[in-house]
Length: 136
Length: 445
Image (cartoon, rainbow over all chains, first blue to last red; front, top):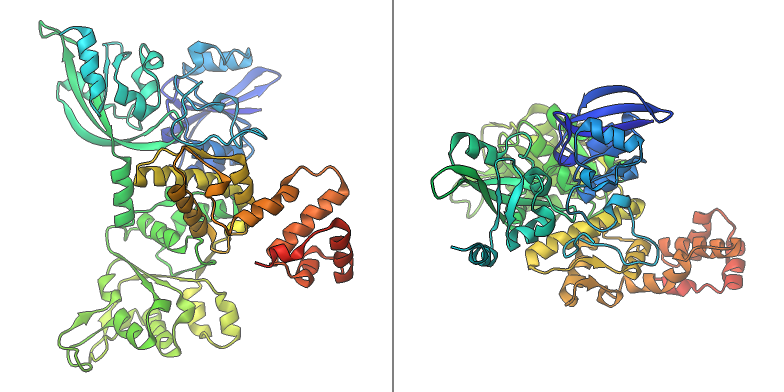
């Protein structure tokens, strides 16, 4: 399984949309196998999503992300775990030990349901829109 | 001044203001900052400022760090942030040092104001559109985005084909703005809107005395676009005479203004567009094949919205956000019922029609949520019949009903065409329509 983490120095980059570099972490049997850094070639959102797909990324762990990019990446079949903060080593460790939900790795302020994944709202619920919604 | 009084003053201003300590953690956060970022102060205070502001400059060129390092304040630097709702917003940032009573630096202060509307208006006036302004998650569109940068650099002639409202001009502008010609003019001409006699002088200009009332020289659109890009929309509508002139521009890169005795060199990139299939026009001999092969060096085919319905929710969010800014409203979302109706509709007018539908809803919606009653009447029939179409099918019979309804809608109630579309015999379709109690007349228009 391949995890991509947009990075700045040794930390998770604060915004995926603006990040210039990703760390690609290969994981097998819940253990880290290898790491490599890759330059995000373009600032165009669709090209970013395509690059992740071409790199065979399964999961993106990132900081803040725009809805547009999150939906594009999700539509490519890549899962997005957004609004994560902290040093890369701590975040990878927390992911492997399923502790990424700890408050120390959570950014403040995100729309309802963002941490649970993207795409459409649940059947029977109203679609979540733009302004006026605060983190609950 | 006491802290409480300071907070009252800060909360009464429309600019977002926050302060940080020397450790870059937020120490105060006013009401406007909460509104612009969408993050409550109780969540912001104590957090690293880059995790709260989320600006493009936080990591690579932090304005506050520059001020803290040099002591120089920064005024009104335009940057983008991602707010708590996942919207990209444009803000203008100013920074200053925060000092205590003895003059010792104890942190920094950053103030910012939302300039999204200004940016939106500027973009609409100047037409500075890029790939990022074309909203799509469809595979077909993303394949086009992938080739756009190389296409833009190549300087080659481009033909954009697509139904009306699919964004042909937006693509043309994006190509221009990605190319080395981006600082030169982009001139759009709708060839279908000009009578044939006028089109020639409009495109190539004329000399004084060329015809009655031509008292002085008038530069044409090719001259206005010199060094830049000319976008010829509805190219399929031009006459045979103009086709010949255009062919000459493409072949020899020169043209003659009406009434001129010398040729003018044209350093212009030509992007053409048509809502008709030009190869069909060539077969019908209403479009010159040699011109077609000249303009069809690179062809982009833009899919209609009904073929990329996965984009509808993304576009609805985009238009809600845009109209909120332009009309100063605070509409947040649409109901599930509206989403269902929008997904079921066929959009003969494509993205432009969806934009108009949302604008229609904005006129009627006084609350925060767009409901079915705000939709135009043309979209509502889709809602009524869509209750069967979008309900989760439990049986093969229901699945058949859904597919037949969708085929009837696509073919505007024409049963023969719907049967062909479904790959079944006409009599089979008639039998199923009767058995499933479907009313084709409802789809007639």
